Length: 265
Image (cartoon, rainbow, N blue to C red):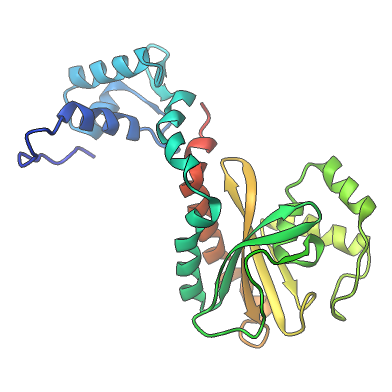
């Protein structure tokens, strides 16, 4: 899409800076390689102008070309590195968790894996109050939670096997998994589905649903929603809850640098 003309910029405004950034932003996950003609059309400059911008950015190390097409290089990540370094994952996730809590009218959380436990690093209470008291910093055994299971499902196989070898299960409720084989099957299911449901295994009357948050290809956290079993049936969770969780997880990962980390450079 061509840039809209604007003759009302202040005197200090440098159009070449605008066009340089527009050139870089024209490269997307869906179109990682671009020709001079494509860039000219997207930025609204002449083909000769687009070629100059592309070749200059190539000389500076931000692009590379094969004689016909151009693509980003890892050096482009330097542009946002300082900004990302000032952000924490909970800060990035906060607005997305708030939006998700309103959409579902349920409590939403962000957790990380720390050893054998999941740790809550961000939590937004439902617009209506839940009777379960969990705060940032709360820990639960990873195996007993939906967040833990999606995080365990993304561990290297050797690490996961070592985890199983040292694990001791306990029954939080009558619904808790009874043995390692049952747990292994649940983690395998979470890996295959890309999400996990733990129904009344940690607390009677409560279901937890979680999906992984990825920064590029790396799983860095899990987004979770806690729902009361009488409000949402297990059979409808996949269609009514999981898509909203996945959308929030993608947004968090993208805002935490996931788009650039996921590019094939």
